[in-house]
Image (tube, rainbow, N blue to C red):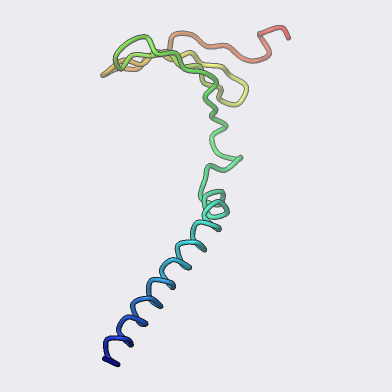
Length: 91
């Protein structure tokens, strides 16, 4: 009988430890995610907008540093539709 009680207590303690580990991981996952996320000083690439045109076909506006690119994407191909610099557009 004593072995059964000790075994149950061991299982409960292990489960409590696992739950505490999961709670700590969940609590600090935001900090870890922000450290692993994209950095500010990358390629300067930012997706402005995307419009779906059909199955696996869309047009996307992408900003790269001071340039704006309009890209058409199909199932097997990608092409630059037009581009301009931000200075070309009046505010």
